[in-house]
Image 1 (cartoon, rainbow, N blue to C red):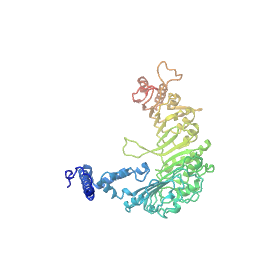
Image 2 (tube, helix red, strand yellow):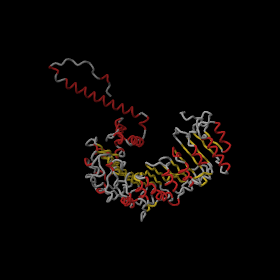
Image 3 (cartoon, rainbow, N blue to C red):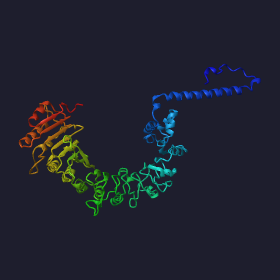
Image 4 (tube, rainbow, N blue to C red):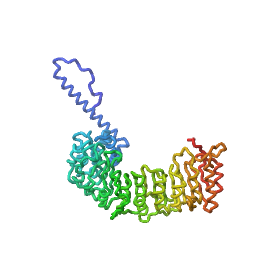
Amino acid sequence: MILTQDIETKPAPMMTPSSDSDWQTKWQALAETKAALLTQTVQVNVAMNAVLPISHLPPEILSNIFRLCQWGAAEVDGGFFSKWISVTHVCHHWREVALHDPILWSAVSITASCPVNALAIILARSKQLPLDMHVSLRDVTLVQLPDIVRAWKLTLRSVWGSQRYTSIPPSAPLLTILHLEVTGGQRMDEEIQPTFFDICTTPMLKNLSLSSYALNWSQVVLPSTLTDLCIVYPDPDIPSFTPSCHVQDLVRVVQVMSSIQHLTFKHVLSYDPSSLGSEPSTTFALSHLDTIEIAGHGPPSLHFLDHFTYLATTSFQLDLHFERPGDVEFAVAPLRRILEIDHRKVDMVTISDVEMRFYTQNSTTDSSSTTFTRFLSIILNDLYFYEDLVLCNIVAKLPLHNISILRLIGEVYLAIVDGAWKTVLKKMPNVKRFSIELFEPLDDRIRVDFLSVLKPMSLVGEEEIHLLPLLSEVFLEGIVFCDTDEESDCEDPTAVLWLADALISRKLAGRQVEKLFLENCFGLHSEDIKLLEPYTTVRWDGREREPDSP
């Protein structure tokens, strides 16, 4: 071992012509001493690192930690050597573990910032493992991609020229997940280039996602092996992205997918008035479909759904746009068929001003807990569920006879009671629990005429009808009740008095509300609760809040 005290540190003598031959020898000796010290320092650092507790972790554990650092790093950093690569610079042990873990190097990210030789280095370190490849370039023709034959997952993202795949091999035998995306700049009406599937066969493909990816819908054939298919285009309000797919073309594409489990189509179908009210002559079974999500034009979307039969457990999420209010009536028949799949029972319905959700009760051996599964969600853009047009022309015509729970969320209860809502509630004679839930309290107090629906009898036109005859529980949340003090300038009776009147009427008619839940309500006081308690069991959270309180 070389010690520092062994090194000659005295100032060097003045050089003279006679000593010119000696300086090189002395300099070389010092350089060798310096190198020896550096080697010794490295050895000491390695020894110090070795005694640390973290250095006792098995290489397998360290590799798993490094993989967690790696996950998603390429997407965040946007470069090839992402932040996770810094683990190879911490110490010799970590570097050796990382460099000899081929799984770490099997995730390949190719961007414009990639070093020229980076891809070859990474592929060599990945050994022969299947690859997870992400290619994000302005033009994918700028890179050769022969190693796609080793890819099990592939993402191709480009700004333009997305479909000029001149460097793709004819087959990707391991590929199971594929995402193709155009991030901008390509118009949907441009000449469509040969697609990925025209060039490369994918016999194992299961999951396919296409984003703003132009297809020739009259000719395209997607792999029949798919279990997950997601096709998304921008909002049709953008003129350059007008959907061009017709219902029959999309039906042809999907009908061959015998194993499909999840379908997502957003702004895919073009508006076709000729599909309004028509029923298909032939239907196809989607016997493995678990979920389907469709956003876009209402008539063609519902017409597409009519071409298939579904499992009783299939879940639907529909975000529909109707160009003309008159088109809404054509939604009833397809929605009825969805609700009546395999005689499915609708147990709970929630209605907000923008969405309607349908639930079925789950079978359980535990009688103390009840859970529900949502199987249909409908959003109607530009239309609102508290308007007579939707309430009377859609909701009231759906098979809702057996629902036991009705939840109104937000401002939806503001509809004219004497019109639409009474028509709807007349179709729901088996409701046992009725709730109005305002998560953001309104500035105005609750409409007292709406509380009249709680009465056992109601007048609709000239007909006296029973409303909610089996009602046993009422739940009110976030409701603003009118003040009950003497200075109140309310011309109508307060909401509390209207509520009490409804409860009295039900009790006298032998249809008593057994429980009344009041949570986070405004303008309620203990005196109000005492007014209600003779007619039902009141569960109040005890919070006396005024409308302007935080």
